[in-house]
Length: 200
Image 1: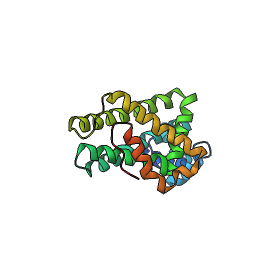
Image 2: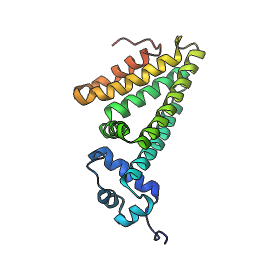
Image 3: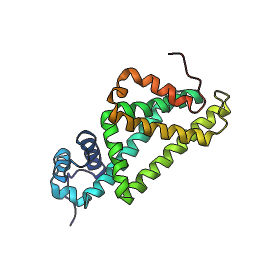
Image 4: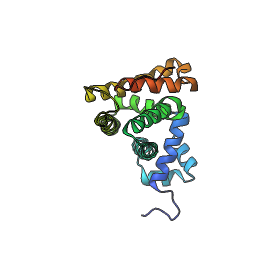
């Protein structure tokens, strides 16, 4: 048995699922919803993914791919190491805190990770990739003499933990995700890796 011509590709189904999860949350989206959003039958969806868990893992991979592409674009728009670091932190703040759909999806994946070791392993690998990226950015800014940071590993670990903490905080203090707070959040996070905060 082979999939019929014209079926959505697995990646397209994963993106459809990611977009639905980001709006409605993982628990509230059914396989029927995903199939309908992708314009395929439920049987076609099951041809590529045998369970909702498989779809969740595929949606995570789609999220990582989107993140890589977007992060590369914002870094390439900056010239100096410090500007690249600032652009990366700015992108992270905007996408993780001020993009409500992104915040919903990533928060729910973390919650899924508590009970599902496969989701946890997938997200842990993504966090490792994120950490490597920020370590490289901070080391380059230090090497260029643009910032002073004597413990890059510790500072980057604190930066990532602070980003996650801010994302959780917004659940309980939604006013912190108002546009006027975005620049301040970026400056505070950058200060953790040795960037001198600009005057308000």
